[in-house]
Image (cartoon, rainbow, N blue to C red; front, side):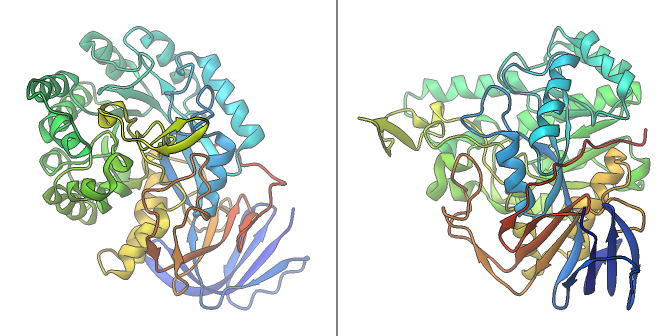
Length: 461
């Protein structure tokens, strides 16, 4: 393994920006200081004009393997992730087959071990009838990020709407419970009402079908279960102003039993964007009216929302109802009911950090706060061992960014297997120049070094 000395770099860490040298040895941060003179061979990197951040930890991703590898694989999406400064990810159980057994969970870890350029962890899946198997995760809680409960509709029998099952999971789980909160009954009633209107539905109807009430009622239910049993609850992808009343900033993050996440697309897009982007931004929970985005920003900055993630969820353009195959060729899809056929989800993991750096340039959030919400807070929330901070002795998961070198999203630059991004044409004010995973320079100035894979995340529980 190469050792590195990053010289004269602006280090963004734990609420401060300071200029120093940083020495990496055997995969870890050996020393932080000035004018470091290592006694062993190093590769030196000039950090002048660059900012060094702890690698982003994305705790909500869908990398589609096994079973859905025409959309994505752990290899392709982890490769895209490290190019965007994401050094660790936690991935969802709605694959084929769904991760309903401990053996299927370990099978995914085996895939990660042989193909992921980033560090990895995988959630245990739940259904209405696998509670006992899911709760076996208690036996290996230092090795698993948590269990995932889809309280809103999903695929592959992953919807958990049986209150006896929910009560058992919240009562007995010793690991973090992560929830997708949308009320299925409300969604179905809304959809039935729209169908009675007799018109073709379009993407702009999505936030009216999967509306604020559906999100609020489901989040409230999850919180009630968590408070009843003192469970460790983490609510994914909050999307509404109304839900912000359910979360608090009265305790330090490390002491919270109930935590909340916001995703970059809910901070960036609003329902106004359906007019141009249509099904490209169809996702669950839906991107909603502008006042919700403003409420999310306010709650993020005052720490009611604890983390920023992506919910990276790639689909092909055909699955999004945007293209179809005619005589072996892909052509624009002009068929009726494209919205209802379109899969929900959008690919984001390559561009999440850059998008937040755009908002740093806009003055909406500080660079230190971005690092807090995308790295420090994730490590604290999940109690990830020895990652998420730039500290001596910690794993060297690091990203170098040039805040004065713009980069534009183009089809040629997109690394997702699905081959598209909802941000195409957008110019970021910054560029990711280097990404280190466990001290290995996996990505540098547009080139990958795939000679070393990432590691399984461990948790201090």
